[in-house]
Figure (spheres, chains in turn yellow, blue):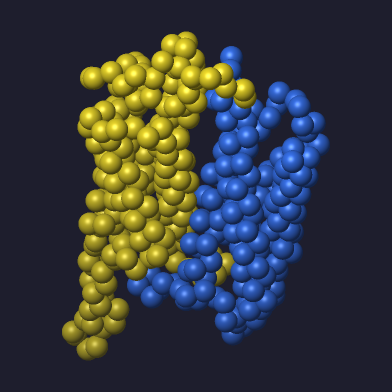
Length: 206
Length: 163
């Protein structure tokens, strides 16, 4: 990689990137992923159902047992809520950086950082969604070998809302996959256009 | 320097292949027969879909790891290896996450749902599953390192070389 005198190393220039058409696609996808992950978090955190069971009858008075199903009884759902919260926060920050970042100075490190953070959040949301999916399957079907009863016939509304949160999270997972792919592609696009301009790195005002 | 890098990468891939293979083997061989009151039941990994998913994903990744070990270093397929590394790392994280969630319920139970922990009845099975999960976790970390490294090696020369 021999450099001639007077040439600079190719940097990741923001103003060239901001003219790409893929910028608006990426922004739209990030908005959708933010909404999906935020919806998943909110639905899971607010998921709660109380039900009263009659367990015995003493004489003529029934003995009632009130059980509440909340998301924080299951660590997998807690992890799901935290992971989706982090992913929605990441997408919100990335949207802000995209819209407002052109006013700040670039140090050349921004685009690889965005791609790495996207990959990390992809792994996070995949872990959270999958753990909650298998816990939900356990709640729906039970496990006859371990003598674990299914609970979805008793707490139907809790299960339905959990299923909705899972669907939103898997949608966020698919969107994060596309976003990561586009962010990694952005690295190559910027560099090839900077080569075409013969490494003329002058920050144009937006 | 390049030779050291190649040997180091090969070694890392070999260790990652070994960990995924051993996770599969430990999980498959975990089996215990126990008698509770009058019932005699056998705890196997295939009772739980989460453990079956864990075994299937680790088996696929170990086959992939074995094939990549034989890839010649100048071939163009290394760009495909970057993409496949990404896919398999994500699959591994999801499988370990699911298996950990179910293993936690098996260990501690869930009092609200009336699920009793089963680890005190089938201790040997439980310990073997825990061992498989630990090895699986190591394989996740190794595959993440391999993915980042292959991303750096394959993409960076594309970015920094003069076309």
